[in-house]
Every structure is written in structure tokens, then in C-alpha cells.
Length: 522
Image 1 (cartoon, rainbow, N blue to C red):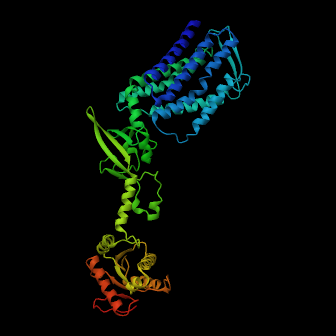
Image 2 (cartoon, helix red, strand yellow):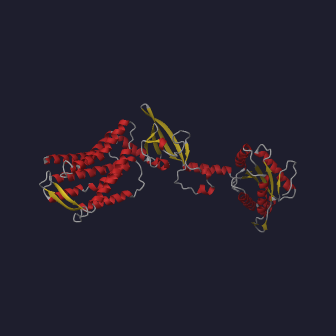
Image 3 (cartoon, one colour):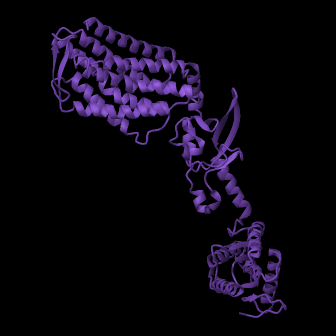
């Protein structure tokens, strides 16, 4: 093989690498392809270094060619690794890894380019002047193979990401995508085989073939992915928008932006062309059109303290907008996701405020009837037990008259805390009105309800209220079981009759309701 053939191969690879780099940067500038540009620069340096090697006439010229070659060679794995992550749109799970790769690549490059006397990469570089073509003969240093292995490993990882990141929906387009990015493996591997067999290490064809791979990928990005206007527009609008963007073609996610990955944790690691059916626990309502809002965080299950301590950075709820885009015979579903957590949180706080008595922090009368009424109906359907309790503070008007309404509010607050601390977590209590309280105890028999009532009565009588002088307060309680009651209102009416009897018979008592309308002290 004449020397002109090898020179022509290297020169062609150099021209192709330079041309595709200039075309993509000048006419198709896109910040989301910056690591493809890095790969082109790497391929260009390797091609120039290879050209200088096959045209060298002295050992110094070969050593200079190696320096140019190593401006690119240590960065092959790094550029492909970062290009794969960038093109697929998946955020790295270990973002610090790229800094380690940069450090390794810069170390290898600096060792050859700036400090050739430090023989950690090459122990020696000489010219085989009598060979055809003339080429360099080198002796590997201690770090040559580790650097080579790191490049191969992370380069293959990046190529796999590139192969998986197709946005194509047709079989033909997917095959083209696979063939183009497979060239990153096939062409260099072909060069290695040729170098070890046909050429017998007299000439290294890998650098020009990497340059040709960069050219093929560039043509594909321009021709098939249309990165000129469409991608720049998508970069400016879709990728940078504050709303999540998901595009479905059939049952496949063909496009997704970073904001959607942030808002919905199930989207964090998915790649374009992922089947929706393969996603686990995806929040209902995003794709199925069941509503304009999707709840990601169940606020109703939180306590007031937990609700107020929520971080504003946690997505709680999404507003979902869906529209269909024409696409030939198929229709694309475009989904826009907007974080409306602030409204959702505000609405939950307003809902609780509307259902809660501001002084006692119990349910107000309306909320109590709603929640306890559902519990009563459930117990009735299950033929289970249940009891209601009515409580009224004795001579509470005297407290307001003697100590003022501020002290009266303190009394109501402390008594309500005592009631809440004495009942079970499944029970429901509410402020019925004024100084009256109501309690619903599902699954509780009369004897158990009377034990709870007596416990509340005793604790309330032991409360101490400090004003100008200490004073105590007592409570009268009426208790009724479900019996043949047909509604919550009826069982509360019976408990109220028992309460009236407790008041009439001396107060500071807990009495059960009896059908013959006679009560007994317990």
C-alpha cells in the first residue's frame, strides 16, 4: 500500500471532522449538543495527529503527532459518556462522576502534551522510518492501559445511552438510528481488527474511522433529527419552560422535558420511546383524562402541624392540560403539567378552616354531623355498636360573667383538649354550640362509653384555671347507644335527653339514656 493511500485516508477523516464540526456549530448551533461538538473536536485532533504521523520524517515529528493525537484520545470516553446523557435527556445519578472523568482525561493529556519526560503514558516514542507507511513505535507506560480501559468503558456506556434514546416511532427510523450510533462501535472495532491483522500494527486506522463516525452522526442529526430550526425552537421553549411537557404517540412517551421529570418522580429516569404501560405507580389522571388536577401528596392525611411544615419544594398537586396534535393517521397527546401546589395547599387550609372551630380546634357542628353521620351509617350497615355523647359545661355563663370572656375561651380550649385526649383516635368530637360538645364513638358499647364519659367528667373537674383566684368547672354528660336509632340526629337527641337528666339531678354527672326516660347515676 503506497504511503499516499494512508495520507489520503487521514486527510479525508480530518476534512470530514472539521467540516461537520463547522456546519453543526455555525448553521445548527444548539447548546444541547455541546458534547457532540466536543466529540467532533476529539475526532478532529485524532485525525490530524494520525495524518501528521503517516507524513512524519523524524522522531521529533512523530512525537509532535502523538501530542496532537492525545489532545483528543483521552477525551473519547468522556465525550461519548456526556453526549449519551445529554442526548437521552436523563440526568446522571452520580453527577460527580463527570468531574472524575475530566480529571483523568486532563491528566492523561497533560502527561503527553506538557510533560513528555514523565513516562507514565509512554516510556518512549520513536519513528519507524523504513516502514510503509512510516509510523510511530511506542512503549506503553504504567497509566496507558488504565486510561484506555476507562475510555472504553465509559465510551460504551455513552453509546448504549445513545442507542436507547431514539425518538423515532417507525421501524425504519429506529433502524436508521441504531445503524448510525452503532457506527461508534463498528467502525473503531473494524479499525482494531484491520490494524492487528491486515496491517499488522504498521498503521492505526482507528482515529480516521472515529472521525468518520462523527461525520455520520452529524449528518444524521441534521438530516433525520432536524436539529436546525425545530430543535432550537424546542430548546428555547420546551426544555426551558417551567411547566412539564410530555408527548405521547400511541402508548409511547416520545418526548419529555426536564421539568416533567422533576414534577413526577416516576418520570425521573425514563427515556423517550418508553411504553406508558411499563411505568409503575404513575399518578392516575395524567394520561387517562380523569381530571384537570392530579394529587401527588394526600394532604387530608396530615395533621395541622405536618401541613404547616411542608417544604414548598415538594410537588403536591399538578394542573393537567391535554390536547391532541395531528400526526397523519395517528394522534399525538400533548400533556402540560403545571405545579399548583400553592393553590392546593391553600385550598386544604381553607377547607380545614371551614370545618374546624377556631377556638377549640375541634370539628364545627356541620363537619361533625358530616363525618360522624358517615360513621353512624357504616355501623348501622354492619349491625355494629356505636354510642353518642353530649357534654355541657355547668354554670359556664357564671365564668364569663365573673372572669370575662377571655377566661371563658381558655376554659373552652382546655376542656376541648381534655376531651380530645380522653377519646380514641377513631372517635369523632366536635363543638356542638356554645359550651356544648358532641362525641361519636363507633364500635363502642354503652358500658365502654360510660367509662370514657366518667373519665372525661373526672378530668374536667380536676382542671385548675388561674385568674385573680383559682376556680374549677364541672361538666354534665349524657350518653346513648345506637339501639333502634335510625340516624345520628336521633341518637344525639337521646344523649341530649340524658344530659338534661344529668343537669336536672344535680350536674357534674354522666348518665346513660334509658328508653323509659328514666336515668340512673353511674
